[in-house]
Length: 179
Image (cartoon, rainbow, N blue to C red; front, side, top):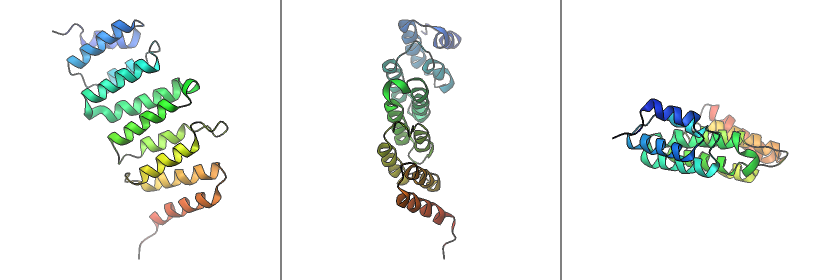
């Protein structure tokens, strides 16, 4: 028998600072098979939770509800990008963008959003990590032009005009009619 109603779960996720209460509400939501991503977003934005706790909740949700794993991973990545960037140099954001890409390989958003994390003055996350990730994405995404353009842009930002032009030309070739 549920201990929390959906409204009580929502209130706990939004307002509680007690980890035990949050954990109990979370476990109850999972037991009730609540797959509402919006509900769990409240939990992910709860500022009383640290990165380890967010990872714990997110990983459990993705295992329990594979159908919403992509949304969970994308949301976690964006939370880590915005909230914890100064603490972990975007490592957790990139980790969850990778997990989102694995959950939905043809979607370009994990690759493109990961690039939005890039801080060129600090090289955070390391540009080689982003370049590798984008190149992996080329093998899977349906909208290759967006990935190619982002590769061109990143190479331009680091001063490698030869590679920048190469990827820009590949992107331009996508629009050209084939003979």
